[in-house]
Amino acid sequence: MFEERRVASLAADEAARYTAEHPVSAAHASRLGAHWLNGVPMHWMRDWGTPFPPVVHAAEGAQLTDVDGCRYADFCLGDTGALFGHSPPAVAQAVATQAARGLTAMLPGERAAEVGEGLARLFGLPFWQMTQTATDANRAALRWARALTRRPKTLVFRGCYHGTVDEIMLRPGGIGIAHDVRASAVAVEFDDVGAVEAALRRGDIAALLYEPVMTNTGMVLPQPGLHERLRELTRHHGTLLIVDETHTLSSGPGGYTRAHGLEPDLLVCGKAIAGGVPCAVYGFTVDVEARMRGVLAARNEDHGHTGMGTTLAANPLALAALSAALAALHTPDTYAPMLAGAVRLDAGLRALFDRRRLDWQVARVGARLEIVFGPAPRNGTQAAAGLQPALEGAMHLFLLNRGFLLTPFHNMMLYSPVTAPADADRLIAALDACLGELA
Image (cartoon, rainbow, N blue to C red; front, side, top):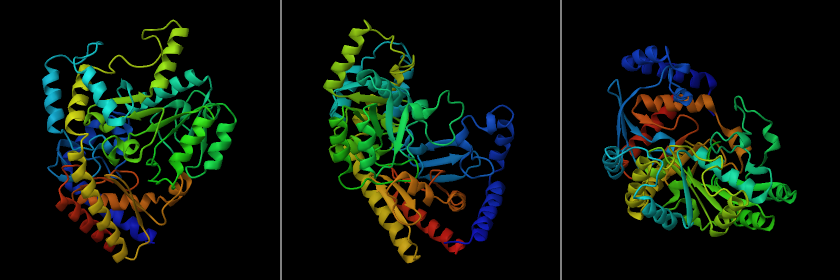
């Protein structure tokens, strides 16, 4: 496609340019290295492919400014956490107001009833619980699934990622996991319904946990009829179906579940659900709730001694942010410009690849887009094989130096309701210039 030598040369040139233009971030990096592992508060902050990460000064709307005064059109948006833009006014105001009234209390806030009603309307599931992260929500959902079915294992799709849940961490790179994950999880390919059926037939699968569109090993769109077949099979074999909407919330109000009429037993959503404030939720059906009550009654446990949840979950600050987000962000009026802008960006990228005679594709789920190097993959293994980290890194660094932030792994972009169409046009032009350099 492109010569390795040329890719490496471009990456080196762009790294030198970045270093020259970011002296203040470099000074921060020197201080950060003294007290933070790998020089950052969280390890993935080093994933940008830069000699050192840009240090954020401010982020608002779909724009970010670093301490060197460099401004970026942000198409990463906190890897979905800021899907609706940084500091949406309604959420920022709700947080500021609640901060003066108390941050955490271990009691239901006065908005709890309306938030429950709002979640039920949005996603179509009647019962809910709050956590701080989608990882926590997935962990709790799986704990309940095992308790309700009395089965030990979870079925996932190869290449998936549902947060740092130990018992399903089948991907490479898990550090310090205490047991052999193959004893608690089974992985099959996203497009292999036969393998799903064979796994369920063994009778030890408590839940199938999956994203409606795979997004963590490159984007993999589902084959026609997949969701209907998964629902049919899980019901037939007594396995609970858990849909993880954390990344596919970009599909529309209520996520992919509402947009495509899915029928999960449990649903998990985090990151953007409260406008970027740490918060996640999991919802479940009337039947699941009744079975949960049965488990608690059998244990004589009608209180919190379930081994699930954290003290700060459902705190008043998160509840206030979630209430504001449900009212102001998870609406058709918010999604309309997001989806229209994403469609326009999708068309622009496809036209560029046609003009450059590249066999690249654009995968899109709502306002979330990803560039695919070659034919569209059908499963996680094909998607992983198609990734080209060196090329991705050179492209990302080129774009960052010209004022555009893409998610630092893969080629993922998000279009927010406050993204300027002109920024999308400039992004396409900058990518065109990058491809010209590589050619």
